[in-house]
Length: 70
Image: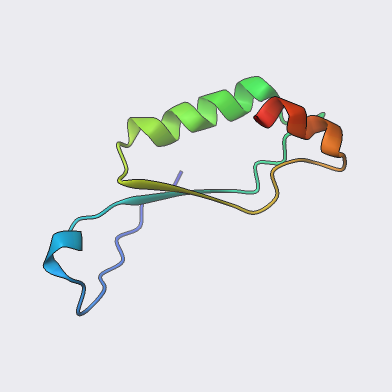
């Protein structure tokens, strides 16, 4: 987990201190268990971000792993 401060010049005052948690490339599959995804999600939620953004690949090699991500 990395925390990065990204100052944005000209950001409107109401967005000052707005926090975004990005989770990417979770790759649910034979090597990345549902338990790992749950732990990772818990870590993200514990940060109390204003927004969580999910990017990247969600499953590894097969759509059959997507059923668990509902």
